[in-house]
Amino acid sequence: MDYSDWLKNKGLEYIDNQLYFGGMNTIDIAKRYCTPIYIISEDIIRQRYKALKEALNKEYQNNSIHYAVKANSNLAFLKVLESEGASLDCVSTGEIHLCIKAGFSPERIIYTSNNITNDELRYALQKKVIINLDHTCQVQRLVNMADEVGYKPELLSFRINPEFGGGHHDHCITAGRHVKFGILEENIVDAYKTAIDNGFTRFGAHIHIGSGILEMEPFVNATEKYLSIVKKVRKELNIDFEFIDFGGGLGIPYRPSENPLDLSEYALTVLSRFKSAVQEMGLSDPKFIIEPGRYLSAEASVVLTEVNTIKKTRDKNFVGTNGGFQVLIRPTIYGSYHHIINCNTSRKDKKIHADIVGQICESGDIIGRDRDIIEPREGEFLAILDAGAYGFTMGSEYNSRPRPAEILISSGKTYVVREAGSFEDLERHQIIPDHLLK
Ligand SMILES: Cc1ncc(COP(=O)(O)O)c(C=O)c1O
Image 1 (cartoon, protein in one colour):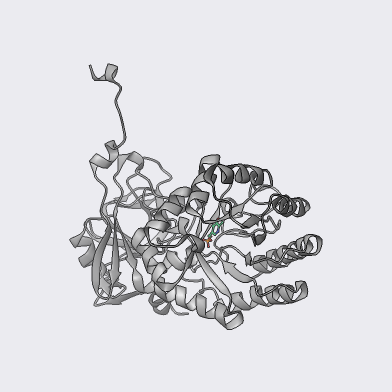
Image 2 (tube, rainbow, N blue to C red):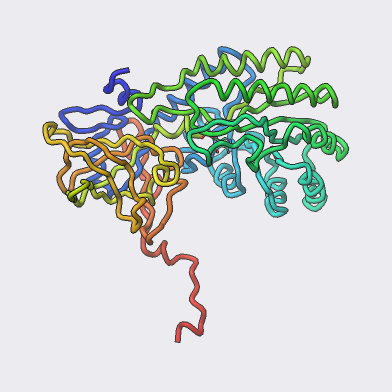
């Protein structure tokens, strides 16, 4: 794929040396609203959802895409997916709260907890979402809580650890013998048996092996092991699984040298194995579920930052901007690559090799290491690509910098979907004890 097609696939193009995203001029947006700022393209969210849904439908009709809310939990973002018919994967009660606020009904929400507390069990029961547990010991607490709440679901799911993980960084590999998630094969029959003994009558199964996977091998290994475990449970307990959830993990091309994931290949790889296992087990049309977060959200958003200082030292050049790891922490904590481009390319012949850095008071505040870009002038804007997944949600007010605004682009219009934070936000919820006020 050539570079301009690679950009176009992310809704980006240059017209008269100015960068457009989702059909809108990024320089105009940066000037109209302050930077740093996240811009979200409604079109890209819809396009990614539709393409994935179509690929799954070709292989198996009874499927459901449960968007992983942790990637981007903006209410407008969730509303777009709600209107597409998506379902959701939530990992906290806060996420459940936001999803209900965005209009999702509880049967569209799977709550995949880990180390769940009693308060969280109570909340999940009260909201009647589908519960996915990650340890057998939680079944009894769930039953006790159901007595207290006065509602006991028939349906229960367990997160299985298939011992095959994958992902762009160790911290994002979520299956394997040494990770905290899920139930290992040797304990899984006991988990479902405990659920049956406690009166549950309908069942689901779940895995999530990791994040940012572009090649098929990790999916193949995990799928095969997972399905062998599901078959074992079916054989020993005669459970008729209502859904089998394969988690998220679908990667996106962060680097220009990377190509988008081949959705047909992904769907065929996982669903061919799923279908033959379903047939072998004689299950009655279980729902096939996946939980993509990054795939649906990463490319739907860019961050615009403003260059304020160009520092050229003996050993290194630095392009100093107002967007550091408070707006995008992935490069700092995972060493992740995010492509960074100029919003204005009119001076193409003047290049600089530099680290692109923010204002956070830490030397790890490097958003792009050793980059070649057109040397920007002070006051010009840069776009950090693929910031829609784990950008805002992992961002912070570190160094007491208020959070940036989020702008949704839709049909040639801009909508503020989150106002920029303020100094009042920095103070909010803080209470100074009386004796310190004297
Ligand atoms: C349980 C679960 N499902 C889905 C996802 C989404 O992963 P991704 O954004 O890589 O698709 C995650 C991410 O950590 C997860 O923990």
